[in-house]
Length: 259
Image 1 (cartoon, helix red, strand yellow):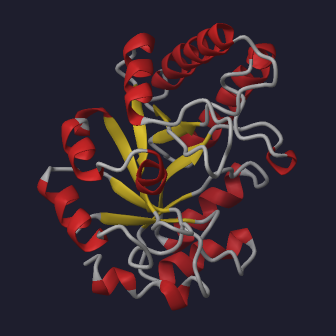
Image 2 (image 1 turned 135 degrees about the vertical axis):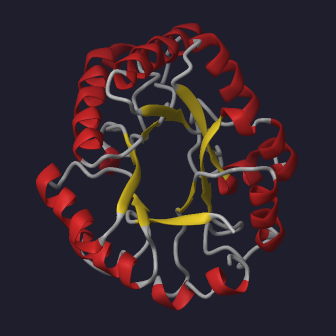
Protein backbone atom coordinates (compact mmCIF):
# COMPACT_ATOMS: atom_id res chain seq x y z
CA UNK A 1 0.00 0.00 0.00
CA UNK A 2 1.12 3.61 -0.47
CA UNK A 3 3.06 5.55 2.13
CA UNK A 4 0.76 8.10 3.78
CA UNK A 5 1.75 11.56 5.00
CA UNK A 6 -0.45 13.49 7.43
CA UNK A 7 -1.46 16.93 6.21
CA UNK A 8 -1.09 18.97 9.39
CA UNK A 9 -3.16 21.85 8.07
CA UNK A 10 -6.25 19.63 8.04
CA UNK A 11 -5.56 16.67 10.33
CA UNK A 12 -5.34 17.03 14.13
CA UNK A 13 -6.86 20.49 13.78
CA UNK A 14 -8.27 20.13 17.30
CA UNK A 15 -4.69 20.77 18.50
CA UNK A 16 -2.43 23.82 18.16
CA UNK A 17 -0.32 23.47 15.03
CA UNK A 18 3.00 22.70 16.73
CA UNK A 19 1.39 19.89 18.75
CA UNK A 20 0.19 18.15 15.59
CA UNK A 21 3.63 16.74 14.81
CA UNK A 22 3.62 14.59 17.94
CA UNK A 23 0.01 13.58 17.30
CA UNK A 24 0.87 12.48 13.77
CA UNK A 25 3.78 10.38 15.02
CA UNK A 26 1.64 8.83 17.74
CA UNK A 27 -0.93 7.91 15.09
CA UNK A 28 1.74 6.05 13.12
CA UNK A 29 2.63 8.56 10.41
CA UNK A 30 6.27 8.83 9.36
CA UNK A 31 5.86 11.90 7.18
CA UNK A 32 3.90 15.13 7.20
CA UNK A 33 2.93 17.89 4.81
CA UNK A 34 1.23 21.22 5.37
CA UNK A 35 -0.19 24.06 3.37
CA UNK A 36 1.54 27.09 4.87
CA UNK A 37 4.17 26.77 7.63
CA UNK A 38 5.18 30.43 7.60
CA UNK A 39 3.62 31.46 10.91
CA UNK A 40 6.34 29.42 12.62
CA UNK A 41 10.10 29.70 12.41
CA UNK A 42 12.19 27.18 10.50
CA UNK A 43 14.02 26.35 13.72
CA UNK A 44 10.91 25.32 15.66
CA UNK A 45 9.53 23.37 12.72
CA UNK A 46 12.81 21.53 12.19
CA UNK A 47 12.96 20.73 15.90
CA UNK A 48 9.42 19.30 15.81
CA UNK A 49 10.37 17.08 12.89
CA UNK A 50 13.54 15.84 14.59
CA UNK A 51 11.88 15.26 17.96
CA UNK A 52 9.14 13.17 16.42
CA UNK A 53 11.19 11.37 13.79
CA UNK A 54 9.14 12.79 10.91
CA UNK A 55 9.92 13.84 7.35
CA UNK A 56 8.45 16.98 5.79
CA UNK A 57 7.47 15.97 2.26
CA UNK A 58 5.48 18.95 0.98
CA UNK A 59 4.61 22.58 1.63
CA UNK A 60 2.95 25.32 -0.42
CA UNK A 61 4.32 28.56 -1.74
CA UNK A 62 2.82 31.61 0.01
CA UNK A 63 -0.61 32.15 -1.52
CA UNK A 64 -1.56 35.73 -0.78
CA UNK A 65 -4.10 36.67 1.86
CA UNK A 66 -5.71 33.31 2.63
CA UNK A 67 -8.00 34.68 5.33
CA UNK A 68 -9.40 37.19 2.84
CA UNK A 69 -10.19 34.44 0.35
CA UNK A 70 -7.11 34.51 -1.86
CA UNK A 71 -6.00 31.10 -3.09
CA UNK A 72 -2.67 31.81 -4.73
CA UNK A 73 -1.24 34.70 -6.72
CA UNK A 74 0.80 32.96 -9.43
CA UNK A 75 -1.63 34.05 -12.17
CA UNK A 76 -1.98 37.66 -10.95
CA UNK A 77 -0.27 40.03 -13.40
CA UNK A 78 0.19 42.83 -10.86
CA UNK A 79 1.83 40.67 -8.18
CA UNK A 80 4.87 39.11 -9.84
CA UNK A 81 7.34 40.65 -7.40
CA UNK A 82 5.31 39.36 -4.44
CA UNK A 83 5.23 35.91 -6.02
CA UNK A 84 8.98 35.90 -6.49
CA UNK A 85 9.48 36.94 -2.85
CA UNK A 86 7.29 33.98 -1.89
CA UNK A 87 9.49 31.63 -3.90
CA UNK A 88 12.49 32.78 -1.88
CA UNK A 89 10.64 32.30 1.40
CA UNK A 90 9.42 28.82 0.44
CA UNK A 91 12.89 27.84 -0.69
CA UNK A 92 14.36 28.86 2.67
CA UNK A 93 11.78 26.82 4.54
CA UNK A 94 12.05 23.79 2.28
CA UNK A 95 15.83 23.82 2.50
CA UNK A 96 15.94 23.94 6.30
CA UNK A 97 13.19 21.30 6.59
CA UNK A 98 14.75 19.04 3.92
CA UNK A 99 11.42 19.18 2.09
CA UNK A 100 11.85 17.91 -1.49
CA UNK A 101 8.75 19.44 -3.11
CA UNK A 102 6.88 22.75 -3.04
CA UNK A 103 3.38 23.25 -4.42
CA UNK A 104 2.27 26.38 -6.27
CA UNK A 105 -1.39 27.42 -6.21
CA UNK A 106 -2.20 29.23 -9.45
CA UNK A 107 -4.91 31.33 -7.85
CA UNK A 108 -8.32 32.72 -8.67
CA UNK A 109 -8.40 34.79 -11.84
CA UNK A 110 -8.48 38.50 -10.83
CA UNK A 111 -11.74 40.26 -11.75
CA UNK A 112 -11.53 41.94 -15.12
CA UNK A 113 -8.10 40.52 -15.92
CA UNK A 114 -7.18 39.75 -19.52
CA UNK A 115 -7.12 35.96 -19.95
CA UNK A 116 -4.04 35.97 -22.16
CA UNK A 117 -2.14 38.12 -19.66
CA UNK A 118 -3.18 35.86 -16.80
CA UNK A 119 -1.92 32.80 -18.66
CA UNK A 120 1.32 34.52 -19.65
CA UNK A 121 1.90 35.62 -16.04
CA UNK A 122 1.44 32.10 -14.71
CA UNK A 123 3.84 30.62 -17.25
CA UNK A 124 6.48 33.22 -16.49
CA UNK A 125 6.13 32.75 -12.74
CA UNK A 126 6.36 28.99 -13.04
CA UNK A 127 9.50 29.23 -15.17
CA UNK A 128 11.07 31.49 -12.58
CA UNK A 129 10.05 29.31 -9.62
CA UNK A 130 11.04 26.01 -11.25
CA UNK A 131 14.48 27.34 -12.13
CA UNK A 132 15.05 29.01 -8.77
CA UNK A 133 13.98 25.99 -6.75
CA UNK A 134 16.03 23.66 -8.91
CA UNK A 135 19.19 25.39 -7.67
CA UNK A 136 18.33 24.05 -4.22
CA UNK A 137 17.28 20.58 -5.39
CA UNK A 138 13.59 21.28 -4.70
CA UNK A 139 10.86 20.28 -7.15
CA UNK A 140 7.97 22.56 -8.05
CA UNK A 141 4.40 21.26 -8.33
CA UNK A 142 1.17 22.71 -9.71
CA UNK A 143 -2.24 21.52 -8.52
CA UNK A 144 -5.54 21.50 -10.43
CA UNK A 145 -8.31 22.47 -8.00
CA UNK A 146 -12.04 22.02 -8.55
CA UNK A 147 -14.15 25.08 -9.29
CA UNK A 148 -17.06 23.95 -7.14
CA UNK A 149 -15.04 24.54 -3.98
CA UNK A 150 -13.06 27.47 -5.37
CA UNK A 151 -14.99 29.23 -8.15
CA UNK A 152 -12.77 30.97 -10.65
CA UNK A 153 -9.63 28.99 -9.85
CA UNK A 154 -7.43 29.22 -12.94
CA UNK A 155 -6.00 25.68 -13.03
CA UNK A 156 -8.71 23.06 -12.67
CA UNK A 157 -8.11 20.04 -14.95
CA UNK A 158 -5.31 17.56 -15.55
CA UNK A 159 -5.17 18.23 -19.29
CA UNK A 160 -4.73 21.94 -18.61
CA UNK A 161 -1.89 21.20 -16.17
CA UNK A 162 -0.16 19.01 -18.74
CA UNK A 163 -0.36 21.78 -21.32
CA UNK A 164 1.16 24.20 -18.81
CA UNK A 165 3.99 21.77 -18.08
CA UNK A 166 4.73 21.59 -21.81
CA UNK A 167 4.72 25.36 -22.17
CA UNK A 168 6.90 26.00 -19.13
CA UNK A 169 9.36 23.44 -20.46
CA UNK A 170 11.12 22.66 -17.19
CA UNK A 171 12.13 19.19 -16.03
CA UNK A 172 11.70 20.51 -12.48
CA UNK A 173 7.91 20.90 -12.71
CA UNK A 174 5.33 18.19 -12.01
CA UNK A 175 1.62 17.86 -11.20
CA UNK A 176 0.25 17.49 -7.72
CA UNK A 177 -2.65 15.13 -8.34
CA UNK A 178 -5.34 15.60 -5.70
CA UNK A 179 -7.82 12.74 -6.09
CA UNK A 180 -10.66 14.69 -4.52
CA UNK A 181 -10.33 17.65 -6.87
CA UNK A 182 -9.86 15.35 -9.87
CA UNK A 183 -12.96 13.33 -9.01
CA UNK A 184 -15.07 16.47 -8.83
CA UNK A 185 -13.82 17.93 -12.11
CA UNK A 186 -13.23 14.95 -14.37
CA UNK A 187 -13.27 11.48 -12.78
CA UNK A 188 -11.30 8.87 -14.77
CA UNK A 189 -8.91 8.58 -11.86
CA UNK A 190 -7.18 5.28 -12.52
CA UNK A 191 -6.41 5.81 -16.19
CA UNK A 192 -5.29 9.39 -15.62
CA UNK A 193 -2.87 8.31 -12.92
CA UNK A 194 -1.52 5.48 -15.04
CA UNK A 195 -1.22 7.48 -18.26
CA UNK A 196 0.50 10.48 -16.71
CA UNK A 197 2.38 8.96 -13.79
CA UNK A 198 5.76 10.19 -15.04
CA UNK A 199 4.50 13.78 -14.79
CA UNK A 200 2.87 13.44 -11.36
CA UNK A 201 5.11 14.36 -8.45
CA UNK A 202 2.71 13.98 -5.53
CA UNK A 203 -0.73 12.53 -4.79
CA UNK A 204 -3.24 13.70 -2.20
CA UNK A 205 -6.47 12.02 -1.09
CA UNK A 206 -9.90 12.82 0.32
CA UNK A 207 -13.27 11.32 -0.47
CA UNK A 208 -16.24 12.89 -2.21
CA UNK A 209 -18.66 14.33 -1.24
CA UNK A 210 -17.47 16.34 1.72
CA UNK A 211 -13.70 16.00 1.41
CA UNK A 212 -13.66 13.58 4.33
CA UNK A 213 -11.70 10.40 5.05
CA UNK A 214 -11.19 7.75 2.36
CA UNK A 215 -14.05 5.29 2.63
CA UNK A 216 -16.70 7.85 3.52
CA UNK A 217 -17.85 8.60 -0.02
CA UNK A 218 -18.07 7.44 -3.61
CA UNK A 219 -14.40 6.77 -4.42
CA UNK A 220 -13.31 3.11 -4.24
CA UNK A 221 -10.12 3.81 -2.35
CA UNK A 222 -9.39 0.16 -1.50
CA UNK A 223 -9.06 -0.51 -5.22
CA UNK A 224 -7.40 2.82 -6.03
CA UNK A 225 -4.62 2.37 -3.48
CA UNK A 226 -3.82 -1.05 -4.96
CA UNK A 227 -3.80 0.56 -8.40
CA UNK A 228 -1.41 3.30 -7.26
CA UNK A 229 1.00 0.59 -6.12
CA UNK A 230 0.50 -1.47 -9.27
CA UNK A 231 1.42 1.37 -11.63
CA UNK A 232 4.64 1.98 -9.71
CA UNK A 233 4.02 5.21 -7.82
CA UNK A 234 6.67 5.36 -5.09
CA UNK A 235 6.07 8.79 -3.60
CA UNK A 236 4.07 9.83 -0.57
CA UNK A 237 0.29 10.12 -0.53
CA UNK A 238 -0.85 13.16 1.39
CA UNK A 239 -3.92 12.81 3.61
CA UNK A 240 -5.48 16.21 2.99
CA UNK A 241 -9.02 15.70 4.20
CA UNK A 242 -11.44 17.07 6.78
CA UNK A 243 -12.07 14.43 9.47
CA UNK A 244 -15.73 13.76 10.08
CA UNK A 245 -15.46 13.28 13.85
CA UNK A 246 -11.91 14.05 14.95
CA UNK A 247 -8.68 12.85 13.35
CA UNK A 248 -7.90 9.85 15.56
CA UNK A 249 -11.50 8.62 15.45
CA UNK A 250 -11.40 8.65 11.67
CA UNK A 251 -8.08 6.89 11.06
CA UNK A 252 -9.56 3.42 10.90
CA UNK A 253 -9.60 3.62 7.12
CA UNK A 254 -5.85 2.98 7.04
CA UNK A 255 -6.38 -0.51 8.46
CA UNK A 256 -9.56 -1.24 6.54
CA UNK A 257 -8.63 -0.02 3.06
CA UNK A 258 -5.21 1.57 3.25
CA UNK A 259 -2.90 -1.18 4.43
